[in-house]
Length: 403
Image 1: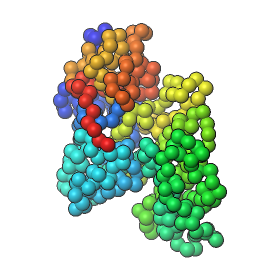
Image 2: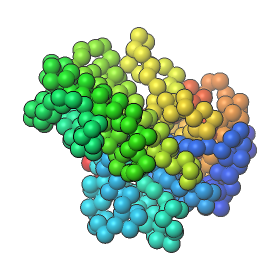
Image 3: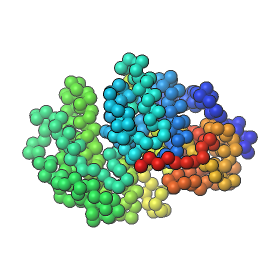
Image 4: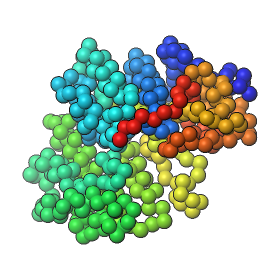
């Protein structure tokens, strides 16, 4: 079996072989991808961001002009400013431009240093831009919609503002009411079902509609300002939907909250791609679970709904122009598992196109067990949601603390 799988795999032992394998994968597409999605099975293991950095360096030579990470869409503007020459200290950029503590993950400092150096020698129109596509939420909850609403309202000329606009500050009240961590697990502790929240949701909906309808008038004079205002209004509305879900008791409540975050992520991805469409394709890097096209079964029981991932939602729009490459590793995989079979066919790291891999796998191949908390093994049933998988053997699976 290892001989058959080794014949299918493309060994990525150095940058040259990595480039050849990527070129072969891209050449096999019916049309060039607008988005190459590269997943990882968990966060904090150095081997995956290092692979990402190597892949990006090759893709830039092939016309890719942006990198998108699983970090706050708005905070990432600090990072993009830095890689395009701002004088902000790099440590400050890593601590403020990344959500979830991801600035401390090995490989991200090196990524920003490389991007800044590459951009120094490029014309403005040809520079590599950095984006985040995550929602402005954290593990413990979601922020108040106040600043997002205020920013959108402040941008609008008075002639376009909804009549009798209420006092946003009065409706929002104390930010602590929105960020109450107890609300993540107790619907009764959430402000999302209050009369104020319902009123704010109507305001946010009006703002999104006004900005959309006024776009042909407002955007030509200030594309950047308009896009930021529209993104903030859209996010305010999405956050209010999220808070409403927090206030709603449900069997699959956490799964529903995750799906609202996912929707925001997909909207951000499509917004970024629309902005970049005239400059070149993009590379996005995030957890496999966010990027795979579909999940084979519900995560929270047989009766729970199966929500689409951000990648699946994005692929609804992109079709064949969405390409997903999963990655995984498992230093302790049991014999008979997909991970053990791939490890036997990999020297350092190898790319396996999914169609021939599925044809060669024995029907009895099993999913591996997680090798540390937070690791979600990419099992045989997941393969149909990917175009290829890269397996890595040169890691001991050590997670660097980033929080």
